[in-house]
Amino acid sequence: MCLAIPHTLITITGPKTAIGRSGTVEVEVRTDLIDQPAQGDHVLVHAGFAIERLLPEEAEEVEALWESIRAHSGTASR
Image 1 (cartoon, rainbow, N blue to C red):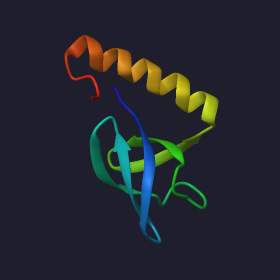
Image 2 (image 1 turned 90 degrees about the horizontal axis):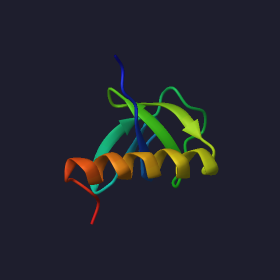
Image 3 (image 1 turned 135 degrees about the vertical axis):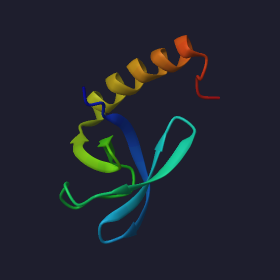
């Protein structure tokens, strides 16, 4: 099973790299697979690669689901 985690791109660091945030965790994300990544984009990340850009309403729904998962696991964002 593959799992993609929603992230918000907070900084574009290079032509094919960015810093993404999911909850309170920030990681380097490869952006090779999406066109014209921009700061503030909501993306799904799998294995360190942004694989899909989300529409704002999709991002809101997916993030709410992840917050529910975090809350149930005891790792909710602060």
